[in-house]
Image (cartoon, rainbow, N blue to C red; front, side, top):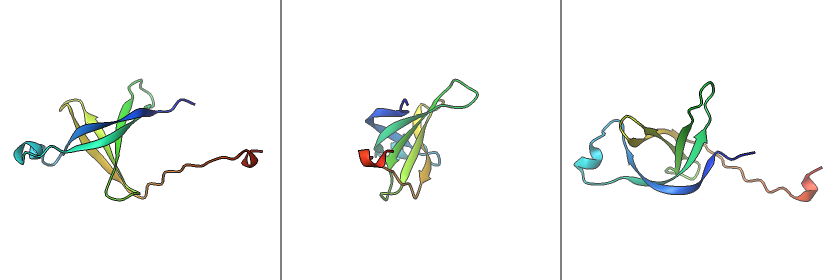
Length: 95
């Protein structure tokens, strides 16, 4: 099975919908390390790449989307109670 997770992390400048000029006004550039996850959409050949980064706690993720019209990355969602599962399968577990 082909993985949809991009094989690298990138540091990207992020923007905010509610106050788009905030990064220019206070002189602070907001950057975040992210990894991409390509989502195959139904009924269209256009894929979407969501960008993920760790949020405030270990079980939280920020989800970002690229806005093509503004040419910027924006926070789309704060996902909470995220559980990343990493199961190690021993040969004894497989029947």
